[in-house]
Length: 152
Image (cartoon, rainbow, N blue to C red; front, top):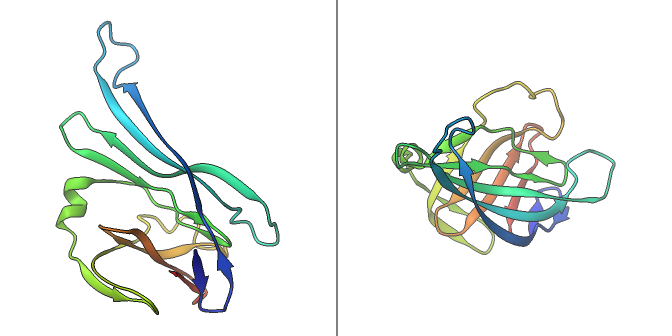
């Protein structure tokens, strides 16, 4: 469960973790396959004024051809949407970690993720930063309007 600094609550429910194999080149006679893992969640619709739940991937892991892993952070929650591209695991491992403290927790393995593009910045639900604990996952996210949501 997440709580905003304005006193609002939201819960994100993990529904399932799916595994599959995907062709790296669908036109190849003998294509190579790589594994893909998706964390499927049920979350609040990020659209303002609409209270309904959606189900989709929240986090995706895919093996890249060079042996690296591609991580897709697909955070969408109540009045919040993280418009981010995928990251290579090796690049994330180079990101500096920081300590982040909430009301009931403190983590020292946190990386700050920011959208690579400002394309949707005019949208009210735009997340300017998501904080990812390497041991616990999403623990906080900040919106452009000063509202932030923290893991409870």
